[in-house]
Length: 273
Image (cartoon, rainbow, N blue to C red; front, side):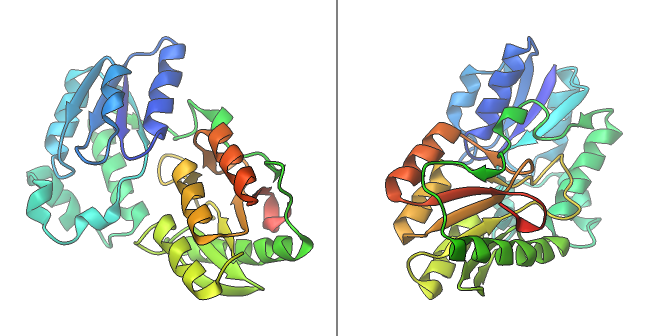
């Protein structure tokens, strides 16, 4: 039995379906308002919890006989701020939060991984079941970037790597080798909108893995919703790190980008296309 801790987006569905194709049963932990309700039709067991119910999460996975688990889909860190009572934090969650040195992505998710390990549950790499979703290198659609856009992408690649090295974010918005926006807690979509509001139409968006990326969680991912934001702000390019970024619903992503004239590029080491 595979444990699936399911956040936002389509990735949890893709992981569950990949497990089913391999003959692996799935016990899913879902979160109201975040997890797609369609997941219930794809897994053998499911429980709906608040983010703060860590004790119940561990109990559910333990009773399901889970020894391996995967975390798939975005869980918004902004949920940890504001009204904590809405998260229904139990004693296990409060102890986890109290033990954090900071509330970085790696700090929070690393503590969750440690809590799972204490129950004999190994958290597996996110892409292990769906390696076919990893971006390839080069131009991914029919729209090719210009030489100037590639230069912006290479420039943004280095900045994004530096940003990721301090675990702040993974996305940078660039225009003519100048940084328009850096992603922080607001997330990729909001960072794109902010960068485009400053850089105007045709900005280049770069998303990379952190230099010390833990493959178990927070792996960079894009999907149709990302492209919809790019279309809305009339961005010119979306460049992602090849072999380290997940593309959810690739066919739709490429088709929408091509229709809007947005170049999709998978970058190799040092930002080379």
